[in-house]
Structure formats: C-alpha cells, structure tokens
Length: 473
Ligand code: NAD
Image (cartoon, rainbow, N blue to C red; front, side, top):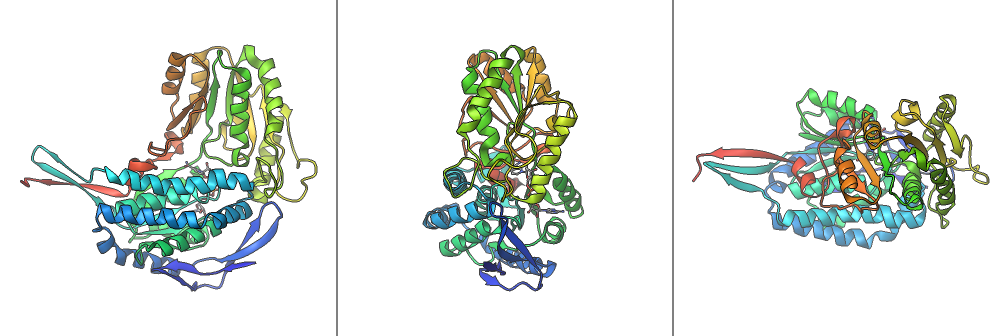
C-alpha cells in the first residue's frame, strides 16, 4: 500500500492539515493500491502563499535560465522512466506497452517542446511608438483529469515554467501517483522553492478553492465541460484568466475514395486507444452509405487487432478507470439500444474472462442518427457510433451538428477534398489520414470544448500578460 499522505509545498513534502484520506484503486484488480490526503483549504492557502512568494524572483528569471531548467527536468524525467510506466499502468489500468509509448512519451515531449519553443519566443516587440512586453501572469492554479496523468499535467506545468509563472497543481484523485513522481522530478531538477506546489484533494474542496482564490491569477483546467462551466463561474468572482480544455464528440469523416480497410482500422484504433477515455476520441464515424456493407465487415475484422485484457499483458486496451465510469458507459450502451441504433458488436456487461476489473466490451453501433444521445453526449469509453451519409455536404453538416469542437478526422485520398473537409470542420485540431500529432502546434477546442490553447508557444502565451509601454525610445 502506498501511503503518500503529504503535499509538496514550498520545495518540501509536508503533512496535510486535515486527517481525511482518499483511496486510490487499481482498475484492473479493483484493489486499493494506496491512500492520498484529502487536502484542506488551509493546505491550499499555504501552497498559494509559497507560489506568491516565489513569483517576484521566478518571473524575473531569464529565458536561458528557464530553458536550462526545462532541460534538467527532461533529464530527471528520463531517469524516472520505469517508475512513471509502473505508476500509469497501476493507477490508470493502461497496458504497460501503451503506458510507455503513449503516456511516458507524451509527458516528456511537452517539457522538450517548451524548451524548444522558448528559444525563439517573442517576449518583447516594437510597434510604432509602443514597446510590447509579455509579463508572467502571476500564480497559476492547475487542475487536471485522470485520463492522461502525465500528459495533462506536463502540458500545463511546462507552459507555466516557460512563462515564469509559479503554480499549484491539483491532480485527479484517481491518478495521483504519477503527479507525485513529477514533483520528485522537479525536486531533483532544482525547480526553485515555491515554484511548483502540489496539493491533493477533491474537486469540491481544492478545485473550488483554486477557482475562486484571490491570489491565483489564472486557472488552467482540463476536464469535463460541466466542471469547466462551474470553474468559469467561480473564476469570474476574481476576474481570473481561464484556460479550459474540455470534452468532445469528435467526427471522423470517411471519404468515398478512402481505402475501406485503412479507414476502418483508423476508426477502430482511435476508439480503442486508452479504452476510449480520450477527449479527442473519434466517437462519431461518418461513412458514405454505399460503403456500409464493406465498412462494417472491415470494422469487425479490425477489432481483434486491438485486444482487451490485463494491463500487465501484451494487450492494446485495459479496463475503464472506475466503477462509476463503467456504469456510465453501460448506461450509454443501453441508451443506444433503446433509441434504436443497430448494435454491430459488443454491448452490455464485461468481456468473457474479464469479470474482475472495470472492463467493457468494445461496442460499435451502426445506423446511428446524429440526434441520438450516443451521438451527442460524451461517453468516454470504447463505444463507436457509425452514421451513414448521402453527400459530403450532409457529412460536414452532421460533423458540425454538436455542441463540442475539440477534434475532427478525415480519411480519404483526394487532396482537395481532404483539405476542404478539414477546413470545414469546426474544431481545434483536425487529423488527415494518419497525420501524427505535432507538439509545436496549438491544441484546444471550439464551442463547448474549451477556451484557450495549449502546447508549444501557444501554451506559453496562456501564462503571460502583454503590456504596452508607449513613448519609450
Ligand atoms: P472532471 O471534470 O470530473 O475532473 C477534472 C478535474 O477537476 C479533477 O482533478 C477533479 O477533481 C476536478 N474537479 C471536480 N470538480 C471540480 C470543481 N467543482 N471545481 C474544480 N475542480 C473540480 O473530469 P475527469 O472525469 O477527470 O476527466 C474526463 C473529462 O476530461 C472528459 O470530459 C474529457 O473529455 C476531458 N478531457 C479534456 C481534455 C482536453 O484537452 N480537452 C483532455 C483530457 C480530458
């Protein structure tokens, strides 16, 4: 049992001022793996005060000093590779190989990218008789979800460090251990006292207190749209800047010239990634009606290539994170059946032989109408809705008929059509065919998927305030 009951405040691990604890489970075994402290407002106040004290000196560090700091973090992070992979596998239930390929690497890449982006970042520019300088925003409050415990935390931390903003992080209580390893990494890398602080606890206590804290200047939140809305309201009381990275219901448009096998493989691998617990998951797959029979056949052929099982084994997909998430996925599968979608494969219950652990059956619905609940609401599990379309205009209309706008995908051959469709989807990030993520490019959502951008120089920008000085020679 991991008894990690301390918070990381002002460069040291300190006892919580409260007695309450939160259990952390391994979703593959359903067993408790450890406890963390349910932090108090007093704990948070101490962390904010430490960050505030660190602000004057840290915000004045040079670009070169912060690049060197980020590079030391990269080295220290690489030295903890095995621990990070173990922690993600255990607390998230992610298969070991994916914990390395996806989670370990995504955490690392944002620190590397921030160092790279800082090298030619414009902190000062001249326009007519104005000098525009970009100052650190002040103290940042970071609130992160459980589905990418390295990625979501390091995106924010890297941006804040690059911009000279001391911070307080509240990681998700279901996956806290990866974040605690990050705190150890920062300690090793010599992050100055008070610049990085970590307080564990519930969203209700620590999350709410961050959102309304008078000494926090920016809240950067990644999580559900419902909580994002609450944070926005609370942050309004102190006119805080906010960055919100929220949910999605992203479309994948298959063009009529697409290779059917390739398109179905892209669709299946996407929904199976991280057990479908991905904000950018392509949950609505739009397919030309004449492709129906061949596409369904290829979906079923592709599915066994992404096996579900024990994360310690050589599988692609593990369990869902928690029982309540499992229940929610079951609710949506039932809803799809009730609303008349065709259940091509999967369905309710657990896969054979996987009775212990929060495993679900990968589920594909076809003949889905876009106004069905399963096509409108974020399910956050390996559940795909296939929608057939008759014309490209109709496909684009369906793709955009959602309150979300986080990501979009288009698969096909004709370059002009790929470009037209990619430009027509109202979302922050569009992948064409197997287009790989570029970490220097901005990430974020349109509509209810969020406000602001992360990654690379756009991410650094969030933690800065532009100041205009007029009349300076
Ligand atoms: P969540 O909104 O339930 O929780 C996210 C974080 O907010 C957690 O740390 C939680 O403790 C905290 N929180 C809860 N209530 C709070 C409150 N009232 N005030 C402040 N903080 C509070 O989300 P989740 O279930 O952890 O994560 C899944 C969601 O995150 C999905 O909707 C997914 O799409 C979204 N997500 C978005 C992105 C993105 O980049 N857009 C990335 C990953 C996940």
